[in-house]
Image (cartoon, rainbow, N blue to C red; front, side):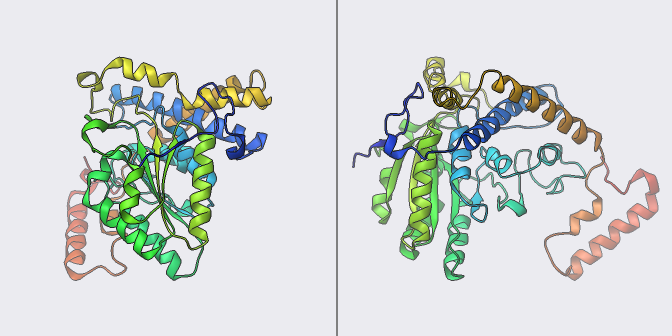
Length: 371
């Protein structure tokens, strides 16, 4: 099955399919542009901090920002986002405070998940941004379940699962796609095909021509979109969401993009990747394309991008200073929180034992945690 790659603009930001242009206002375009700028500078700065030993781990989304930020724009705030680990930009777009984002990276006392997750594994309940799950594909059934729950509750909310192409090789992807189709759950399965599942190339991940084409086996519509064209991403996600809200079920979207950086700070892509491949995709940069589109429309005045960059740098600097000043770790008692409404007897015993140790050792076991 050959699928058309859905585009609105070409690599130079020129509109080639005006009938698909979501016709965003200047304010909407500038907001998208500023958030992508924020994410790009933030990723660059955090990678540097990790190399300085100031944080343990980081993942960036360089070159892939249009996929999740475009999707976030196309959806309602009441819709649920089930991210992998490159979608933090969607949370920032929805209003996740940058100081809180930073505290999560450090796992300090103001980390909303209390140091229980790896850095970049955010969870933001008030914006329906569900906790990032590192095991590949494990969150896809959760998204389909949330969508099914919305349907049962007669709500017209949509749930989106973001995942890389490597996740399509997991049993959870297949089970989820099948259940979403059978139940007509209002779900969007959003495959971010960035070419690499850590060091495994797309060419050895599947024999299928496309990942979107896998949808036909489940009775789902499959859509192939240029993931570096943020206008095209907004267009296809809007259509998939409208279809879901009409009760017509789920959609599988494959967004063609590229992971220009390493998989994570624990990875060295030079060991397995041809550098010319990276340069080829650099010419298709989503921020460059959006910039050219906006300039052609007169929506990015001279000096505005420099203003954004200056503002973003100051925001990051302030958020980092705040997070690093919040040195205490989450309180030891938080070990027993957030799982049970009423602690079972065995955990009450353990809590009492902890209290006794704190009482016995005093300041050697500070209330805000111990090394």
